[in-house]
Image (cartoon, rainbow, N blue to C red; front, side):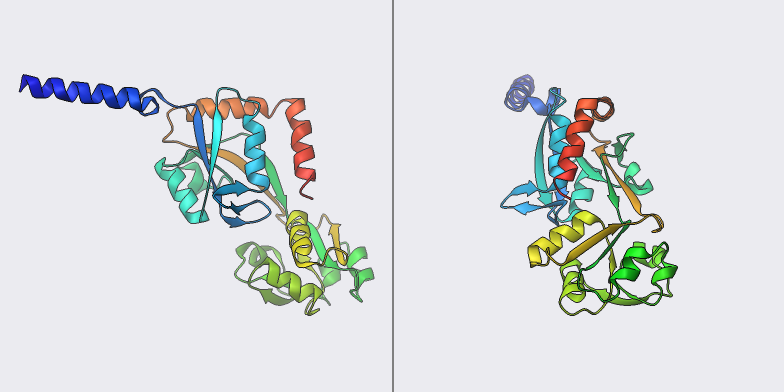
Length: 258
């Protein structure tokens, strides 16, 4: 029995030395991103690309104590992995449910702004779209929406005639090619990315407006509560976000996607 206990002790030491991160903690953090949400995140081979991976990389370029590694997954799986601590972090809206399994930065790293009217330069109702001061002013027009979007159901009034599209590419074709509607309500990043991909950039018009309700959706860095150093990581993220140099680089990065 004594010999068996000694063998177990030796085996434990071998594991400890071979995999120090298991026992002593690691400075590498793995962030999970959606594999199919361009321009915010998508998969290029096995690599995460897009605004959100770039944002996280920028933050941790100011934090020498940690390095980051990215994985791309179906979004539901990414959230599940962070909940269980299989991955360390994510960048998302800090809903009540997500706050239950992750600690989030105090300030948003990015705010997705739905306060834009997206339309074609060839639309015969362009003067009305560009002069409107409320959604009521657009009540005679048709809005192209995303099928099943809860946000649109809650914030785009029923008096607007709607044409649904399955996804952003379908919606852009409905707007630009089929001329099935007059405008969309979308973030500028989404609209410009889709128009560029589909060849509609020259016809695309985007107008910032202040009359879209609940248009600001904040995205914060979140770290799994399963990570022992979660509070320390978030404290350092919060400190970085106070830096004028970081804020300057953050603005430049976000503008590069608009």
